[in-house]
Image (cartoon, rainbow, N blue to C red; front, side):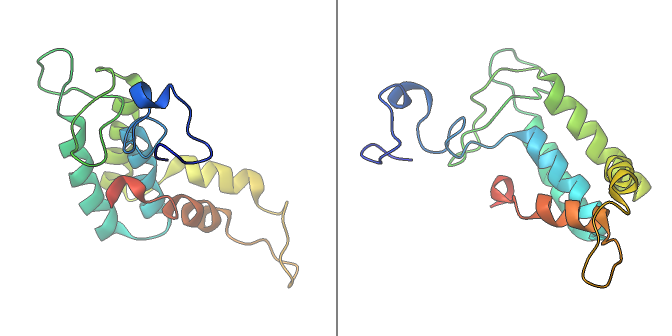
Length: 146
C-alpha cells in the first residue's frame, strides 16, 4: 500500500511504509515455513538454497550488537533489520528449517497430513496428499525470497 491507496491509514506514514511490517516486510519466521514447505513438496535443492538465504537474513541485528540477531522483520527493499531483535519465533523457525533440510523431512506437515488424511475426498473418492496441498499453499507465499 502507498499513500493515496484506499486502505492507506495516516499511521502508516510512520509505522507501515511500503516494504515494512504488514505492508510487504520480510518476516524471517515465514521464510522458515517456506523452507519447510519446500521439503514437504520434495524440493530439497530449493530448500537448501532458501535455507542459506534465511541464514543470511537472521544474522543482522537492529538493537544490540550480537552474532545472531533473529530480528522480527526486515525492510523488503534493503534487507535492513527494522523489527525487534531476539525474536523466539524467528529463531525457532530457523532451527526448524535447518532440521527439515538436514533430515529431508517436515514432521509438522506430516502430522497435519495424518490428521487430514481421509477427511477430504477428491473426485475419485481418494484423499489428496495433505502434505502436498499444505506445501503448495505455503510455496505460493514467496514474497520473502523475491
